[in-house]
View 1 (cartoon, helix red, strand yellow):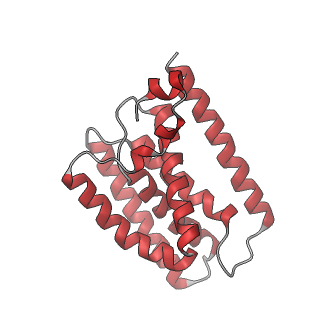
View 2: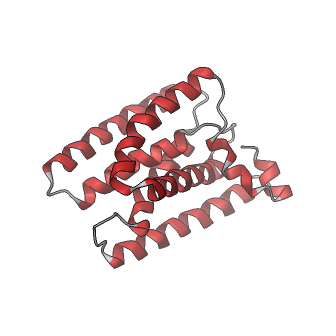
Length: 179
């Protein structure tokens, strides 16, 4: 993602394209493997359309937060993959009485922590994008819904409002940091 082009030329599609652009074979391979194994589970729970919606919106959310807080180049599906990790945290929060879901959520929490520590210790990794995708993946399923589950209406509204506040704040912050 190239910040000045987004700002000065109105190329908003640059929040989407980094999800599909990778910086080498190993980068696309690792993201592909992660997407395959995590994506299968999320797609079984949410269905094809909701899965695609969560994946894309989480990736866009990660790129918007990266726009606000990262100065480097952003590329790869990892923002969206972190969004899928966030979905598991959301499921754990909603189904904490279900032992299997709680265990799965705790496993993903450990995976998230390991990945964030790795991000902090490595150079060239967009931690802002990863955290943004994680945030998106946690909140987005609240308002798109879980099939065959009646979501609390106040949680739906609150999650949407929280996401919109974060998006507006990050777009404004990203814009101000480049002027």
